[in-house]
Image (cartoon, rainbow, N blue to C red; front, side, top):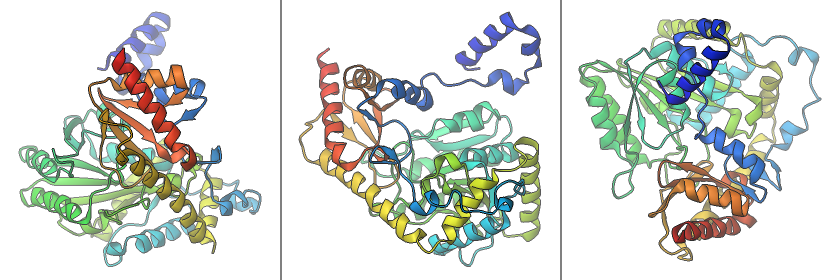
Length: 432
């Protein structure tokens, strides 16, 4: 059990022993990470007055980035599209529109058999559905060493799964497909593995190239051929934000129908793609080739939704549907893409300029909301604290030397000042 969970349990037992006795085993194991992204972001929200590059949202001119087609539409709907309960699986029109969008964005899915997207309360809910349906205590869940910390809570703490990490990058900073392959084949005796593929990656902002994508698919197929049942989750939270040479499609399309021992599951949503983080509209889509299997999986998923949230928010689904159907949607989304791409390119230009010397390296990034600095011989947490206390700048410390910076929420004009301040803080920490 995590020490933080133990502390919470001891406090509750001393204060309210009857409530403590009501907790399930899972309830006793849950905790809120004091050193995680959410807690660091909360700390930054009160101290980072100059720049707060902690939260995975995009901003523009000091305000949350948004599409005009959504902002203008908040009072433009019939009561029937706002106030009644949405069906547990989501608005049928929205599910249809999202399926059409997925095929448009991922041509490799066009001739594949897969289920109708089921609406979720954003992506974390979709991932928890996967965990509930497929992860038992002792089952292995495989994802890289640079990952979103909520995977540990979702699969490890909530379901008791065994987490197996492999290095995301090789020594020459390429995607480590051999590491994934070895981690998969090591599960032959268990006969089952769950793999999470998150591209663009949080925290590094990295998406493999097409060739590496093929290697990932080959590694998964090799595991299936070896007799391992593989549940593959494509966490496509930042899908579409591909700024350089990389895959531009989800691997879900290549995995669908590949082998009967492989079940691909696509978890995605409007949250990051359409800049509507607070709307909490996501989707889960199964890639089984049998319509019978797809129906069973949908019914089991609806059982989970019914027993937890009952159904998702109807207004949010209506707003997203309206945006997808608007003739201005693609143009407005392209405009925001160019802003995000400009920020990513600006950061890369700054880091490649030589002005910061050798105090850090950076992990490859070509997509998404974030990038990660690898600080040389200095504590990332010490730098984070220095940035907060001296410069009112918020960042995220990950591990001993990695510092995550969300360029998504810093206007391009201020990025050089931001990295200048990070550089200054690193030098100050080095000097003691």
